[in-house]
Length: 246
Image (tube, rainbow, N blue to C red; front, side, top):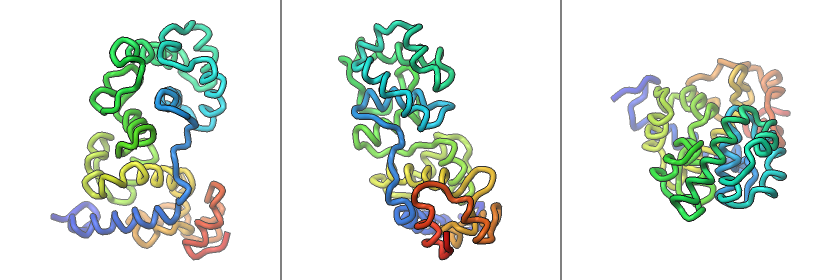
């Protein structure tokens, strides 16, 4: 069968795996960029990250985590006080309701602890499939693919899948790579989306994946121009991997 990129399914799978291996070289520092020390903190931080940057969430959570340490703390929170603490993350009323509801559900149904399966996690307030996979992969070591906006944009650009529904994307990409690699692949793709393959102006001319990318050229291909678009502390190393100087 021939894919939208003109490849056979086998050729696409081989290309995807080559790109996945290269991503591990490009982003050896890839990790969950939300700060947390336990599963509950990660769940809370992920809920707060909706329509908000990880940087802003990480500025907000230290005081929050110091005050609310358990599920019962969130369940019994003063709504006005909680809303004020998380106001900087936006949509604070809805998020406060989710956090209080999450705390109550955890106390009532799971002994105050986060469950370790996706079907159970997605029944909790504020936790959809994406959030559940973040929790599973990063708090419990259960492989999961996190389909955020960066991940969706890149796997579509790269011709890994033409699906646009996050759940279908998750299953399509999951079929192309080993399950044990799902969590780290998610981090690496997201890192690449934030640092190299930007939404409006990807750094095509300074991207180490250029030779394997069917969308090469949608951003500047001139190395001198493209290298200026690279972000993050490893911009120089990424440029070097692409054969250009930062």
